[in-house]
Image (cartoon, rainbow, N blue to C red; front, side, top):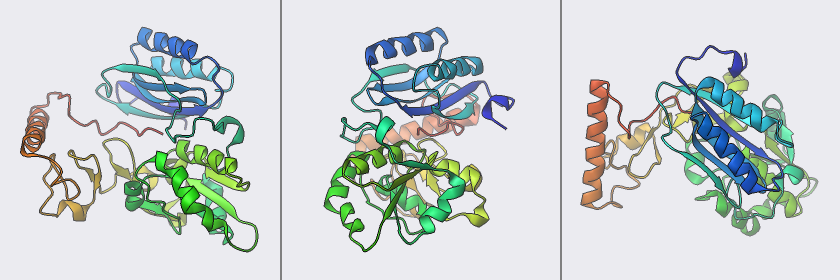
Length: 323
């Protein structure tokens, strides 16, 4: 059953979307989308670049449906990737529609993923591809994401940010191709946008047989039964769920409010972990004033939660991740 046919369990519909498609007039598109969002009281962030559109927005169900249809009516944007979710309270308080050099920052603005990305691989076909001994599987996410979960046998570049991926490839990754016989490269990320752009980058570097997981790990976890899965661990997501497992069931990780990094059950057992304040990664990276501020924020959130009142810093567990 598609998200459009499900009865809404909450008041606010959230759409996380992206599409690589040529945009000739970014300012005209920015003005058009900003006007449509303002008129419909939609809030969130949309990023526009010559390579396409990316963002997460929320609003009344019909308003979000109308916005998605507006985007799909634009040339090249008909198959825009959209993931839907719901929230009882507004997850965003402002609207930002911005023009950027890239919709996902790799530091390679001259790439054209709309024309030169690798081949999509459906989740149900992914296992066969990555089980092939001639396939090199590369995780295009960041180091902390790979530590939470990954596909069996995947190469972990351990980059701190997506912008670091090109340097990793040129300095280390290219050596993976030095083997006898033809080699396929399979790349993946959380929702599809980073691995899609990474395939365009590898093709610009002369790699021809490149593939990426359509819809990312999230669609794989939704589609492939756990008994058949080659995924190990949980998948970090950029929202208050922190991490999810098969069927997108909530995972065991929580979020450190000090450094915004995922914290495992073992990490929460560390003497350096203080809920809402710090974890083993960042306990010595904050001065006393900032730690006191974090502690007060946590106290206010717990007070608001106990009284049932909203608090601007209170997490919204239903918000879906950005792609």
